[in-house]
Length: 335
Image (cartoon, rainbow, N blue to C red):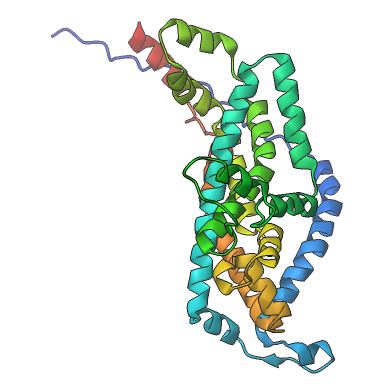
């Protein structure tokens, strides 16, 4: 019998030296400490005070030194069982979604327009947007209220000049539907400049060579935007949409001034005006604080999806560790 040689085992890979993790410097944390303390002092204390007040019966008497009565979750229970609350929340969310969607769409179209026109037209458009953005809210609202005035308004005058359209002394602020249409136009007009400039900054980072290559391959403008531009500026679109949702949910000044010019009925209230009336008209600061806590929870719930997607995109993807032996086996298999 012929002896067979035992198969030789491949030499074991030499042990890898332990990877030393680089110690993070504490300097950035020390530099952030003053800003974090100021943020906690400026926002943390009012938030804690508001939460404490929401558990108390805090009215006009407490403003003059009377001790507040602890009611626990009584204010929240009273709010959640109030039929007017559901109407206000539904109205506010609908208005917020409509205003944010229209603002982002119009802002995106203006940003695309600024990339397509010449320098002179683009500069004129940017100056016009800056002027609209820089105008104080109260001054802008004074002009808008005059434009929609039922007696001397320019909007009614121009629409009434159209044959077959009767808009003589039409009161835009007399019904909830037309009231919120006017409010939507005003809020979108005030918010579009920020969205347009933000998206335009993102569009400047899109490669012109890629767009030209897609155009040579026969891609239309809509196809280039859908498959090339939109994926590249998706982080910008996400953040501006998130900010618009938050800002439009807490809109206050525009609605209040329109109510002062028209009807002050509760059918025209949104979250901000409802809280304001609870605190000033009803003098029920406990209920107003409880409703503010609910609005904060609603804001977090609406924006959580976008925050989660942004965090997922920013998180680094870990690669599976590979040893030298596995690399050699892969090379041998390829050979």
